[in-house]
Amino acid sequence: MTLTGRARAGLNSVAQELNRKPWVEKPRRQWVEDVVAWCHQQDIDLGMRLSSQTLRFDASLLTQINDLLESARLAPLGRSLSGLNSAAQAAEGVEEDKSSREGPRAKRVLINLPPQPSAWLAPEPRSIRDVDVSGLKLAVFGALVQVENLDSFYVFSPEIEALSGYANPLVIYRGDSHYGGGFAELTKAWRKTNRPHLYAGDFDAKGVTLALDSGATHLLLPNIEWLAQNVTPLHQPAEQLPFQRRLRQRNVTLPSHHPLRPYLSLLEKQRGLKQQWFGGEFVCISLS
Image (cartoon, one colour):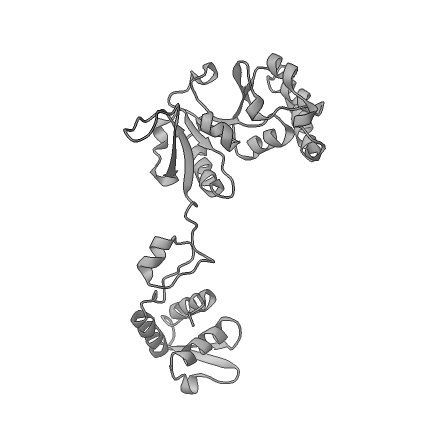
């Protein structure tokens, strides 16, 4: 039987209280019952500390608990496994807490880089890397380009006129259940740079809403003339209607000459276009 996470949290709180008084009494419910069961299994004699209603904690009891944890190669009191990745949990001892540990991709993102030739790999137009967000030096990137769809991300190239004004754009996959956490962490850090954040994704009500929610400053889209000729009701199904209200409200608040207005007007006609079908010349459209 392992010492439960809630029992550890309770014992850590008790340890702090014992710095101010010789003993602490807690009612026998929830985490205290976990401690009682664990102590019984480990043959720790609670003696007069235990009554039918309460358990009295003192420094001697916590020392016994810590000694047993150490002998079993488990994390001592005062150390939480919550939020640690597997390697960090392993450094604390042999106990594993999958329910609270940090997932292996929690801080990982997919980035799209210029070709990186290798002797063992056939040449590719772009190089895709899985990296730790904390290892990215954001200062070297002039803009962040967030790509919504994974298949479009793999073939995306920033070598287009619309991005020529940005030095060394960082092209990143928006993320999904696997990479969404790392992406959220990256965008939080990116906001502090006050540099452009471009959204490259589906031209539909949901896609534009995702761009707004992600903190993007611009949309990367085909020019309005090309897009108006190619949008289709097939790419903006009826289930996207709930997203339209927010976009209509935004449209009416924009100045009459704002470049985003004709794009939002197209969406109001319940027509759109998936990113994979984009063509023509691309432009950057401000969202503010």
